[in-house]
Image 1 (cartoon, rainbow, N blue to C red):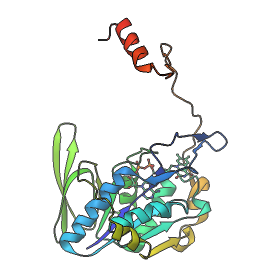
Image 2: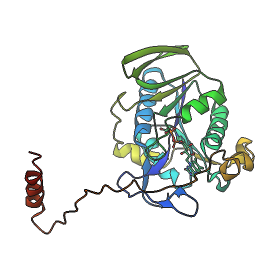
Image 3: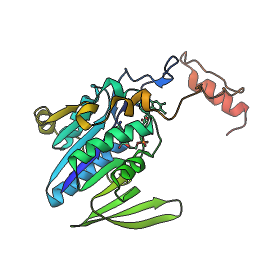
Image 4: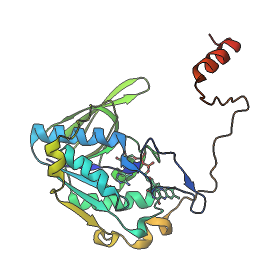
Length: 258
Ligand SMILES: Cc1cc2nc3c(=O)[nH]c(=O)nc-3n(C[C@H](O)[C@H](O)[C@H](O)COP(=O)(O)OP(=O)(O)OC[C@H]3O[C@@H](n4cnc5c(N)ncnc54)[C@H](O)[C@@H]3O)c2cc1C
């Protein structure tokens, strides 16, 4: 069973997110990490491989620094990584991103393609649908439990009212929720071994994607304006000069919140 896992290199959760006012894009030069629910997708792929044998290949579109995140997933146990990295891909919206990733996935022709449910920066929870459509493969999203048989896959899909149980023939695309498993921590052996695992870096041209089919040139969406959320008039800022806890308690009592 060949399993491809799409993983995204995102700004670290602890970093204050900043929008570049000139490009209206998220500033991505700071600390970054593997997107949290993509760890669940990697974990699930490893479990399927452990049960059935095969290969787990990571696929990502991002800057060269995304290789750091890929190494973490390799350290968890993935076999190899493919990073699509190209200046011409900067500014890709959903269409350009899905085009480049679908081209990389076509090249892999995996039996199963796994995604995390949503990225922590874009939070669209939609890329997998666009990729599945381009690959013309069935899709099950928001999957909280997965069973893979010889020719089919069954996902327990979380909904507002309970669960749907959906089967699809392989090859298929699955987006997993963070309820599906507890991702493993990489072992020291895994971390050392990750350095020697194959990591391929591809340009758009290597995938037959023309430079004007991705990036700014192909974007069908334009960010018109961005701004911080409106501030709340009743906000009070408490500086901690040693007795912040008392000040908070006084405020809570004053407002009769306790
Ligand atoms: C006008 C415009 C310009 C943009 N410019 C940039 C830019 O310069 N750089 C940039 O990084 N983003 C840019 N974006 C955002 C980019 O288009 C989205 O990140 C992308 O479409 C994925 O959407 P999402 O982040 O909402 O992912 P979701 O749909 O929430 O992601 C779901 C899952 O898809 C997978 N996934 C998502 N992104 C990737 C990826 N890149 N590689 C592998 N797997 C992935 C992961 O498994 C993830 O959990 C831009 C968006 C717009 C509208």
